[in-house]
Image 1 (cartoon, helix red, strand yellow):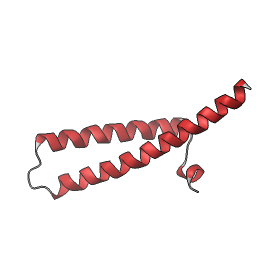
Image 2 (image 1 turned 45 degrees about the vertical axis):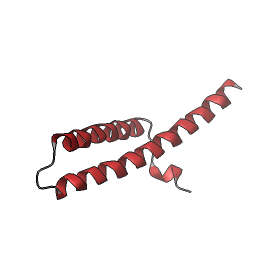
Image 3 (image 1 turned 45 degrees about the horizontal axis):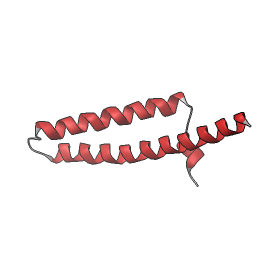
Image 4 (image 1 turned 180 degrees about the vertical axis):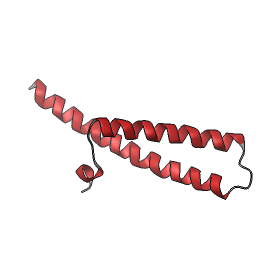
Amino acid sequence: MLFKRKGWLRKRYNEQLMQDLLSLKEEWSRQKSLVEKSVEPSPEVLFDLHVVEAKYFYLLKEAKKRRLSIHHFSK
């Protein structure tokens, strides 16, 4: 029984990781396009871009470590 629960929890957290990864990817691309369109971006905007980028790449590395793929979660 313990192993079934563990598999269920792993699946749930993997799905949450993929949802977070996709939302951060959208946020990162939005911030990146904002900076690219700016003539002189403020330090706050650049800082926000670096924070979102760091979060995105961390989750990307975690998904790679868990051997997750977007194809597992598309329905």
